[in-house]
Amino acid sequence: MTAAGRRPARDGERAAGVSGFSQVLASGEYRALWFGQAQSLAGDQVARVALTVLVYSQTRSPLLTAAAYTASVLPWLAGGLFLAGLADRWPRRRVMVSCDMARGGLAALMTVPGVPLPAMTALLFTVTLLDGPFNSARAGTLRDILPGDRYRAGVAVTMSTFMAAVVAGYTVGGILVAAIGARPSLLLDAATYLVSGALTRIAVAARPAARRPGGRSAQALTLVFASRRLRTCMLFGWLAGIYTVPAALAVPAAASLGGGPAAAGLVSAAGPLGTAAGAALFHCAGPGRQARSMGPLAVLCCASLALFAARPGLAGSLAIITGSGVLGCFQVAANAGFMTALRRDQQAQAFGVAQAGMAAVQSLSYLAAGAAAGAATPAVVIAAWGITGAAALALTACWRPYARPAVPGGDPSTPRDDPA
Image 1 (cartoon, helix red, strand yellow):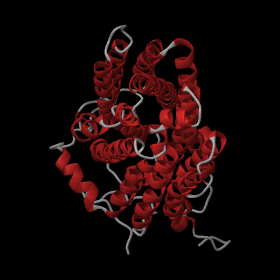
Image 2 (cartoon, helix red, strand yellow; image 1 turned 60 degrees about the vertical axis):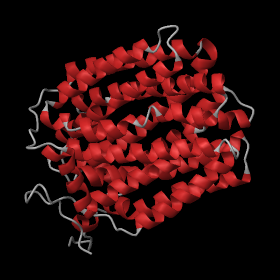
Image 3 (cartoon, helix red, strand yellow; image 1 turned 90 degrees about the vertical axis):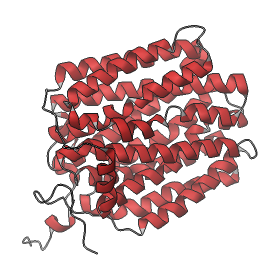
Image 4 (cartoon, helix red, strand yellow; image 1 turned 45 degrees about the vertical axis):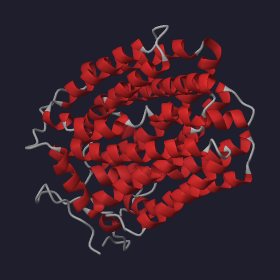
């Protein structure tokens, strides 16, 4: 114990500012990955708004609109399980650059006049399929360039700024679609991939592949589910996908409130806006407080959506979704707790499993919500989803997450867990 009687090594009560935002942003490699991915994420949201507006304008079906939105999420399931391992077997910079170039080309095809909606949806599915290896390679690279406590700070920086990028993308996307149309707006998404790939190739150092033996998803599944720390953090991430359902219902929800594409963009952006602010504030808490507050915050994040049962107007809806997003800052602790428990040669595939599960939960949730919105109003559906998510997260919160840093060394296949 210190002279003041504190136990920082146990509780992590010192402010996370010890490895603050300025130290993270001092890394040129991090800045390149950060900016490249931020502007690419903004472009992705423009594409999502454009495609869902196209589908809803032609079909007037909440289910088909939600299905189109799901086409931008569902491929994470296959990409996370079957392609994420490429980031362990191949050099991660090469994986990121290759994925960006391929996604840029495929996104450009979506802008060709006359391409039918089913073909556009298939192209978006393929583009998103490549998110699996890209995101896994990026997550592993961040662990390489941000050692120790700097990684936790990097997660907070990444989440807050990336959510801001999502906000900008949804907001600008709604305005662009209303001003110039859906198909021309998709060209912006293609350009952002090319910028991201160029920045990664120029500014990120080449590193050898992790060369994990075997490298099969079944091994990653065994690793993740055998560890209480990994399993708990992952389940928080999976189940929290439920609270993003307002974005999947943004177009019909805005229409039910008398709004158009611009209003749909605001509904989609409200949650990420709250998360950006919440993550920046959450960073100020020590690692111990972050881990202990993860469960309560996750439950409240979903439960707050039950306020939609009062059928608020557009302003009230935006306030509720934003508040839910602020509480979603618990994902900083879930992400950091998951990745810091893994060895370098495990990171890509384990991250892929977590991403695949999140995609499965989101896809099923979005499709079910879209189907339900055909029989009930979007507000009622969102309220029901919030209550369901809160109940599921309350059960998950009963599993206390591991809060201390992983102990170096030991068997790489068995991350240490917090004793009961």
